[in-house]
Length: 203
Image (cartoon, rainbow, N blue to C red; front, side, top):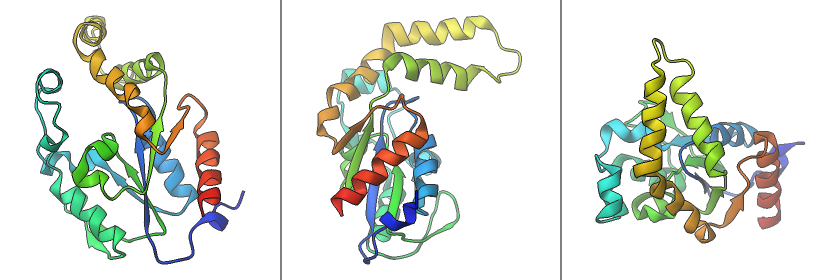
């Protein structure tokens, strides 16, 4: 498939936000879709060290649930400038970013984070089953860890069952607010095909 055929040929930059829980496959899809569309890619995690956010997610969930507590000003500026068609030097990666017809944004908070979400044109939620996402996180965090103690895995699973699971469930309860909900358990190539076809229909 010639994905380039589906790239917009006008000057309007469109930002595609890829959302989902940890382990949903956001980063993998961002890379694959960015490559398919020859698009600039933006990753939320790249900005962690120069941003502010709640240190205790469980406390945040049980109290304010205020997404403005994630202060990612540099990220918001990058999205703003790219959307306006301007190049910008990224403070997080120290690389110059160029506006492309589509910008693929690994956006875990989606439009709920208004400072960055206001720039998203297409919001996509990866509807990956909770058990699959959990398995992916366990494999990611522990498979290649040196001197692994199995009790660390037990502790991670116990924390998920007793404390953190509601944070993951919360995202699924709000998935209808996204423009597109896609089964994240599919092969990434198939997900890319679905998104590209949808972009073709929208344009």
